[in-house]
Image 1 (tube, rainbow, N blue to C red):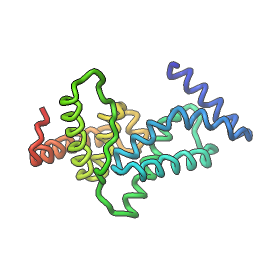
Image 2 (image 1 turned 90 degrees about the horizontal axis):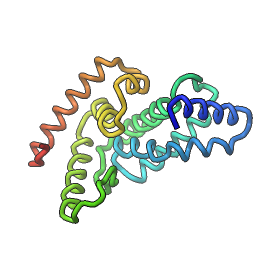
Image 3 (image 1 turned 90 degrees about the vertical axis):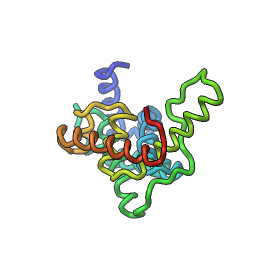
Length: 188
């Protein structure tokens, strides 16, 4: 589905929800549940917390549908909600990112067990290193390099300017590089 068609489809679903058809919201949840979970997981680093935050985000989005600005992207609106939920959680818990369990995101198929083990170890180190970054840098790196969003969409989601986001991304990559070098990981 192309972006314009998807936006029209999503706007129709939102209008149905606002008209009282709560069941139609399940289409949007199904469409974005993996994306929202992945963002939450990458920001907080804990599977169970990420699941809870993703669920809370969908509930908050449903309850706030009346504030959704038609004409804007629903996915961007959801990203901002999940990031706010993650920020609130991190502020309340003041915890660092847990690396007990790392999701297998975008794992290549057809690789040898040795390559898979090495890739898994690299993901573990990367998640641990992400957890050491300040929140504002971690968010930009997750959205830019893991979710592969452009700076304009990240600006819409975070409310920060594009130049500030580019600076955060650059500084975040530099910090990440130093953290990985300090841990002996070859980041190639």
